[in-house]
Amino acid sequence: MTPSVFVAGILTFLWPHVHGTGALVSVALLYGASIGAFASLIGAPMMALGDSADVGRRTGMYLTILSFGSLMGPPISGAINRATGGYSVVGIYAGQSSYIFLILDEPRKESVLTVVPWLLFHFHLSHLL
Image (cartoon, rainbow, N blue to C red; front, top):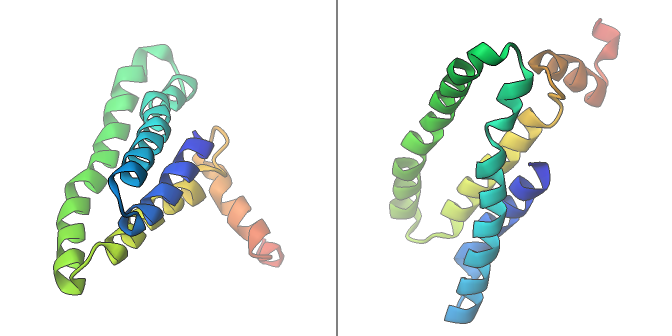
């Protein structure tokens, strides 16, 4: 899932700067392939987090939380577009969201509880423990 989100983030940064039909179609195809891999793998971690009887509940809660980004993203993007008069900053806003997901999701490794030690290690704050 990480490589597909990484590629989708790069393409999100690039799409406002692509000009021409052929270039835009190639960016759209690459973006579709990368985000398709993410969309097909989004529910896979829910299987490993507990009893199989609760997979539906966990998946529903997870997708509900993810839906807030879909609910808030387009109005924010529209406001950015209206304020700046172009899509360049909108691409930066949308692309950084992908990388925030990667930063929060990658250190998880089966447990959300590994985020705090990961942050402490990477920011050299281990003397606080």
